[in-house]
Length: 139
Image (cartoon, rainbow, N blue to C red):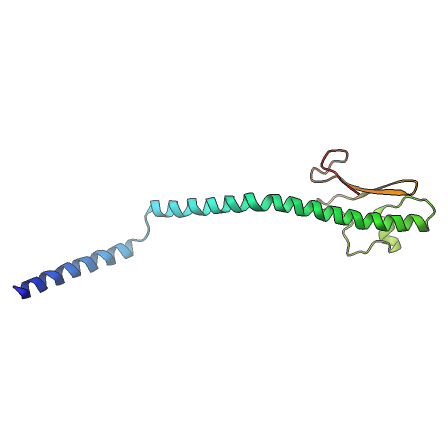
């Protein structure tokens, strides 16, 4: 009787091993692949939602920093050139503005320098690239 039980267990074990081997060869089902793709899409969406606003904020901060540097250089240029209002090209030519600084805003538009007496302002069109809208960057 014991021998019969052992043989029965061995047959069952072999059958189970064959089933597991066949299943391993079959691979993943379409449903499993779809679940993985959906999970990856959800993760990508979450990252996009978190990262895109941060990129916009970083560009605005960079534009403010660059506009401030240009504004300082323009103020120095005015003190040396008796009230003339400079352009970014003037500042670069005279060495008032370092070539390593950005002479364009993060959206690849030129900064605009305006002068009113001794006061200087530097503006960028901002993300929409249009001057005179509410998203302009101004120092």
